[in-house]
Image 1 (spheres, helix red, strand yellow):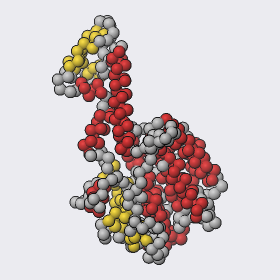
Image 2: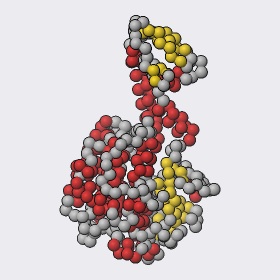
Image 3: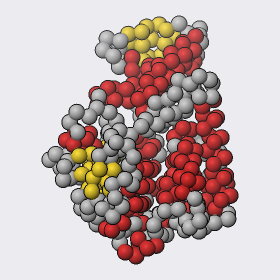
Image 4: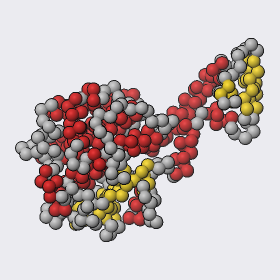
Length: 417
């Protein structure tokens, strides 16, 4: 619930001493401390009775701090109590934000496990038949039609970014309109331009599926004709854009960027590569940032660096990830690499290596992709950094956006906004 989210946020960032000192009727007099300093706290003020101690530092006409560092046992009690409260609240919020595996060994315990997407229906091209992309009898089939489907996306989200990239590279901007989302202070995506029916992403899900109870994630593809949620799994939406909307794509873009496996690359090997990119890089940075134990973190960050090295070596031999032509593998990888040095390194604790300094082939590849038609219009680095550092408060409770590295190439604010 929103009020729970706000309350937990408030408690998480609040100093426990400040919290109790502002409670009505609070009075803690004559705290035991060293013989040279006796602290008397009355109501919402803190008066210091000292022997030959220097006066407390005055900032803006008010005493700075409680001078607990000058006490003996009280400081230790405060540190242990604050650490326990802080860790308890952090674990509660992390369990909601980032579920983890209980694990049967120290390596897996506390490892981040991404929840499965709920809506996995498929848009099917009239040219490809009813079978492509499905195979699950529980999936509904929707016909590919220009203008019928709306894509809800947040520009800061890497999973949304990959579908925006596919949309741009395939020239589907007119066939699949988008509705932009922004992070809110209650933990939900909100519409950048609210309507009478929709204010948050939860409203979109509720109007389309009134009985739905679950995670309200983006991207989400909605059928405006039947008012149904078609799919909220980014890899599915990406694959549908690659295969099912070709007849509505821009002709020149369609000829240049099929996004399928390069000629001569086995489909099975290509799918395995895409899966590795997801497991060790796309999800790998989150596994590093959301790990709840040291062992889980060590395993995640080691796997991440190994995969980055593997990809860097591959790009030393070919222009694109899977071969000489741009493919779905490149689209899957780009959002993470684009964010890596600016967000994931400092926030998700995987900054001992950087793309610019340690993976030169990945760095060159990122620059090459950025200048392709439509790509830079999907990139908004300022919005991305703001969203990550200010929305993921369990990882950055102060909400401070750190100074980042210099931009490696021209970054423009997206024209989608």
